[in-house]
Image (cartoon, rainbow over all chains, first blue to last red):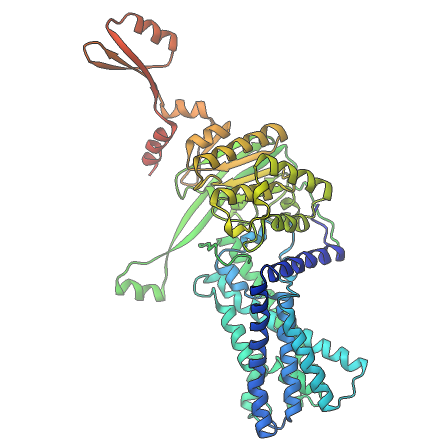
Length: 281
Length: 318
């Protein structure tokens, strides 16, 4: 029955996740409105702080106010797309640490397909995409950018690259939960939250010894700052505009190897704990 | 994206075939003394636990097997090995002629698993939504889904629960809904780890009755673990006892009673207010013996329970 994975099947799996997300969001008018409002306020608050500083001082570190707005729009779009596609599964360290990965083993699907499809939340996560798109349209208008199909494709490529880096990094650090489930149960939350805090800050004007680590070891600079400057036609530090793609490839490979190793450890040693809460909302 | 899936890797007539399976775990050891804590920082002390030690057995298709043993005997480990959640250190496992480790995906579309302390239902959705999710994930054909949904709704009496959110179900209701969901894809083999855990008498009777019916009418192979020997005896025809990672007994419940020395006794009350207990195997011989006694007021019959016999046995094994 379930062993053939086709594109049609992937779409059906995404559709059932989308349907469940919609009925979850609409379960109650009060919850629905509160959820949408909370998401909007939280996102606008995150980006408006940096934007207001830029507006007050006429830009930050060589970036104009409108360029900062563009960067905020990019960051909001990334957050939105990321929550839409991986909202349920990004905190994989929780699932591993709580012994809940076993629920995935009993499904007739590969773990990759499950991770990709079961986290699809287009409705509860979609509000950030809407806000991000509105901000992006405003910023593009203010900057007077010449929008060509190539530019739109570049934007999509950067958004996908940024998402890949976020997911790969989350899975990379979450692999620690295979070895220390209790201690590392919330490691993905720490990493991802840390990600959001720094990712909206323009690094232009910062010294190189700050910029370089934030583009390599802690790649917060690749979340919005680098892609923004690349899309505006001036990638920083004389790096190639394709640098984020190379970085995404490298970190994905590394995450894949480390996660597989952790998974092998898990099926050999087993999980010494099982926590029933927080499994499937 | 399609991929040809290899099936029947280990062709066998058995539903489950385990050959020389060993599974060990390591446990961290530490006392609460400062010296030991510091020593453990440099050289952690670990103990190897052998959950299964060179275990071999077969389960025929259509069988209803009780898998029992004291706490920590290796029952849940076996369930996890059979469902591909764990890899054995050594030995071979074939479930429905497939390797749970190498053919997990194909196996899962023919296998049903239920852990009594877990739920597969979506917490914040009505039960029917979880069922629909299962239909898509397991790719269950429409007609089979409709047929099975009607069957489980009727037999498990869950009609009233379908629109209820999983988080609002009682334990017994949740177990029935979980069991129903597990059966939607018509599994050929079902593994139940403590399915009656925490259920009240009514819920337990309902579940036992349903499982017996499923085994008898559909020929579904069932492997069930429980600490309640009465439940197991009522459901299964064969019992496999595991202790310290080894198969300690494999046979019928009657043979287990003999093995445990679960004797039948007649308790005879006499008119002079004395009482005598007579152990017997042969009822005819007992009746003859009783007919020769004078002054009998009342005769009662009793038997050492399986639970009692096993408790003694488990205590000896420790």
